[in-house]
Length: 75
Image (cartoon, rainbow, N blue to C red; front, side):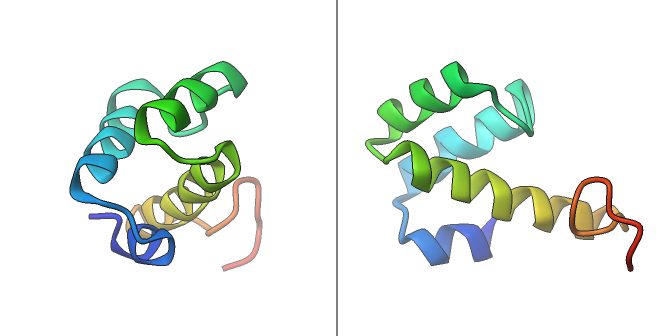
């Protein structure tokens, strides 16, 4: 589902599963602690994890017919 975000970061299927589970079940905008825990579980840097969430959020917002950026009045 998050193909653009996953392709950009070259993630394994198990990493994608953990990230998608967190995105769908925990938070689309994880706080610092959640981000740190997910990054550790996926063996990714916090920066890469945050980048994945940013890309995934943009993709989700597009699918929902919302502007790509939170709070954007464009589109």
